[in-house]
Amino acid sequence: MNKRRVVVTGIGIVSSVGIGKDDFWKSIISGKSGISKVTSFDTKELRCHYAGEIRDFNPEEFIGKRKIPFLGRTSQLAISATSLALKDAGLSLKDLNKERTGVLAGTTMGERPLEESIDVWVNEGADKISKTKILLSSANNISANIAIHYNLQGMNFLIPTACAAGNYAIGYGFDLIRRGDLDCAVAGGADSFSKLAYSGFHRLYAMSPERCQPFDKNRKGMLIGEGAGILILESLESALERNADIYAEIIGYGLHCDAYHMTTSDVDGLEKVMRKALKDAHIREDEVDYICAHGTGTPGNDKVESAAIRRVFKEQRKTLPVSSIKSMLGHTMGAASAIEAAACCLVVKEDIIPPTINFETPDPKCDIDCVPNTARTKRVDIALNNGFAFGGNNSCLVVKKYMREN
Image (cartoon, rainbow, N blue to C red; front, side, top):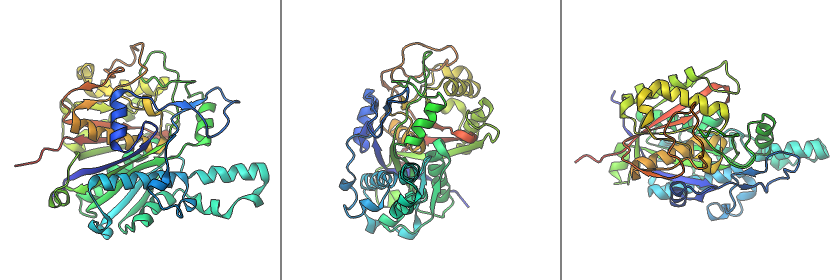
């Protein structure tokens, strides 16, 4: 059986640099930072006080007011991004074959009410935990709530593979469509701002005090963010039948688990996952025009990712643009690679590469072209999206410019 082609017809973004595809895109190509002082909780006992919190998000613009109390913030972000993506794709609920439309959502931290319940338990006692919060706490609520909100009855999966989860969700949706199990997929990732993640990375000494500086010699660490990124994936036949605008074509992805690495990625593993993605997409290394890096800004991650790129692309790496939008958004956990996949779709559509901001001093151990500080106009036919995670859950998605055939 011939595998069906899979295209992206809608993009929904909720992020600290913009809500909606257009605001997000304008921000990242202009190098706008979404980093500001934390307001969700008191950070006075910590060394770090900055994050990529979303300031102007009003879920009532996307979700009925009566439903909001029954949804955790991560579900609110995910449903809102889905609403934006469906609208962007020109899809109404009556257009969808609900039994042939699936939901695949990735996350790292799950729903915020779990953390809130733990705080109540510690400070007030277990009997004070709200029954409603218990019901809202389950991570699988995120994908389920999207499906319930839109009455989507196809396959439904919550994929908790940490910071690579968005790529995993999009890759699985791609698989389900190309082999014929679905015609359409709502795929991406979401995570709300997490006190637990913030304090955890702070305790690991992985946090920067103020700025995220991927690939810079003096980088000091990551910053935590929040957000949601949702792509509408369709079979090419479905998209052409309704004359949809197409952002890009998904042509392959790779997954590789370094099960023996808990907190850091391994050069061998990152090399393998990029090579697996290239093989699945049936393309050569010299056909790649851009890499959207995992690029967290931690000393170890950026060095290892650069070394893996060096192995795969050899001398080509010196002219191959590799940028990190985490320099602007912070690390949005399970939403990260989904938002970055959306950025890749816009890059191949618009032929503009977003920069790595806050770059000041080159690092000989990161000898790549990180598109420092200023966006670049360049034809991009094929982009790779790297997403790596704790536990060695590595992923790489391949996005191609869609050219309508005459």
